[in-house]
Length: 66
Image (cartoon, rainbow, N blue to C red; front, top):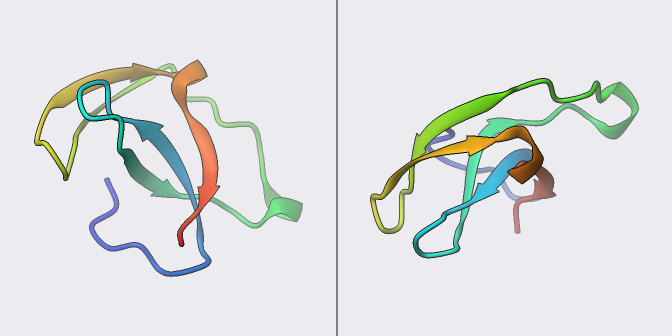
């Protein structure tokens, strides 16, 4: 999981199953260098509510940090 996000940087993200807030777990490559994300599942702890969860590939998205 990413500890600190940089503004305007792209990350792979899941939304917490408990509180719904975004959890950035990996920096994403530039759009022109993006490859398909092939992660069957990941296990992460939400930095907001501290719920640990397992997330499947279809729940992951690519978003830019504010």
